[in-house]
Image (cartoon, rainbow, N blue to C red; front, side):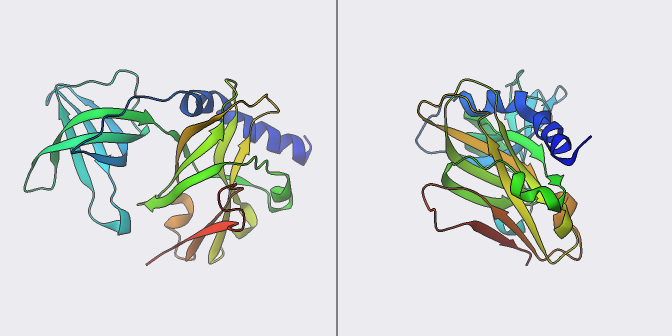
Length: 225
């Protein structure tokens, strides 16, 4: 199999999930509440609660969130979601009972890689970036993308040739597959970078993207403390 064909096979692996996450929006409620990107851990039958893990910025201690009496059947353990919630009680161990007001499911994926000789072939259709931030070993991206109502590619790939360098180069791979685009819509992605972030050699994770809001800003650096 040729290298370009191998790249295409790699890119096609997550097409189906991206359709769900980019092209549907869930409800929000505003008021006295928080918005955090969290990991859904599953439904604990013993506690009668849906359980979430919150990784705060700046590598602060992890918090466990419990929504008592609520089950989210469409979620799978490991899903990353933007959670709109109101804290109810905070306990000595740092866990928090919450009331969920809204959920937006994010594109959830682990960092993928591409042969360094093929980096220039990675598709990078434009986005409108709202924010990009790190929590723990996840890079989170909130942006707007053109709505197509079709499958697309949207994930984070690493230049394999930089894997063990002090600066690891990653690219937001985005391909609308040539589909007709209509209007801009919210899209959330959360990508686990543990494979590089935990390496002693890694000092910086650099994320390259094609952003129409700030076209002069070609990449964002995430530095280890």
